[in-house]
Image (cartoon, rainbow, N blue to C red; front, side, top):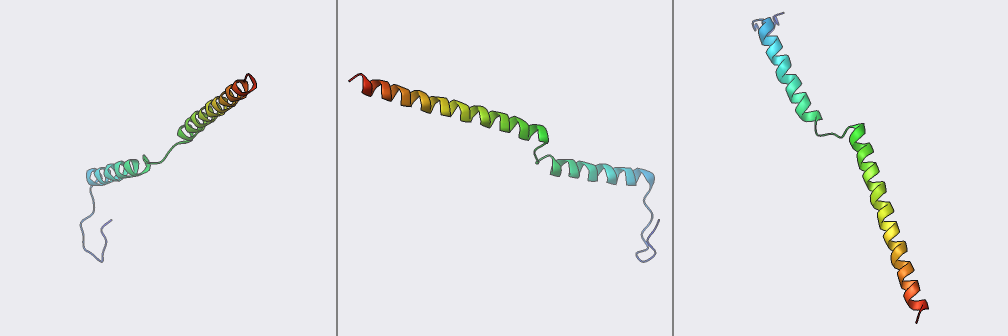
Amino acid sequence: MADSKTGAAPLTRAELREELDRFGGEMYRELSHYATKADVANLRTWMVGLLLMVMLNVVGTAGAIVAAISTQ
């Protein structure tokens, strides 16, 4: 498998395995920065829960204001 233009010696099986392991490690580190479908689903669930909580607080605050005004 030596390249005839460079005259480089062919890689041994152990060297090739080492290169592939190193490449696999680099790819894992690079791709581990991206979110998975499960990460996105968990984030979406958390955001919907937060939105519902905020909406309930707004409705509760508006109800308390209306009650305070109507009793005066």
